[in-house]
Length: 314
Image (cartoon, rainbow, N blue to C red; front, side, top):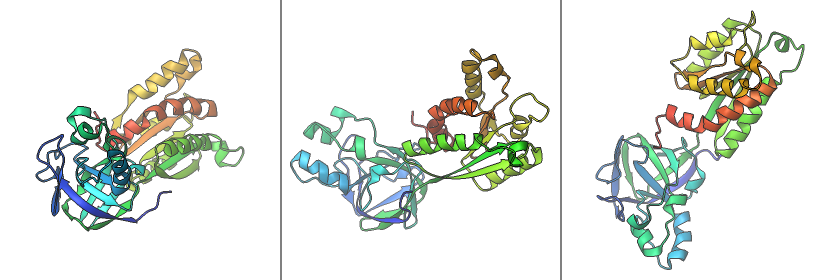
């Protein structure tokens, strides 16, 4: 787990009126929901505010062979005390009244259109600079202190099985999903809390858990079991009633991919969709099917999370 409430300091705030130029240090900056007033990079997009740590500055000064002024990398906010590039999208910084949310780590290097690159032939911003959007407006000044608030994703995994819920056999499906998620969150440098649920094939209990997921702002919900055409296979039907938006292409792709070799896979009625701010994935009950489904889901899950949270990287 990342260190919550880790303090850091603002050592400089910087603006420029044109893109591709060095930013100049100022006494204070005003942050609005479109970024920093008077700055060329302000706007309704995910990179409205840029940050760089002095920890990165010091390393690059050796390469440049001279002292560097804050703002030379076109960063709006220069910090000290926190390794910024080890944060992740959706982590937040609280600085007085201001709150920023990380949207991107690093960027594509602009090469000859960047002032520092023209001089040195390299730039630290594409690797170690980060970008954020404004969540709460306010004013920042040099010398202000803030705290780091890492995002903790809330994940619910629901296994539906009459027999497993009675203890007649071990639930292996829920743990199989949990194992895949552990790898996914580790790769993406995200913290998460997993809430496992094991219930019988009971529509009312599933309905209650889905309502709980919405009310408690879960980010992800996975169900396993009840996706076939048997008399107690109702999971997709219950979940559909809660969805604001379905994502049909994902499950259609999975059925087509694996159904071409195993026609019985085409009988799965698995669905995916968005339920308020939660992404929901309804998976079959077998461990083999879960491994197949999770492979495809996790390939695009980071992008899905960014889209649901309104971050468009295009």
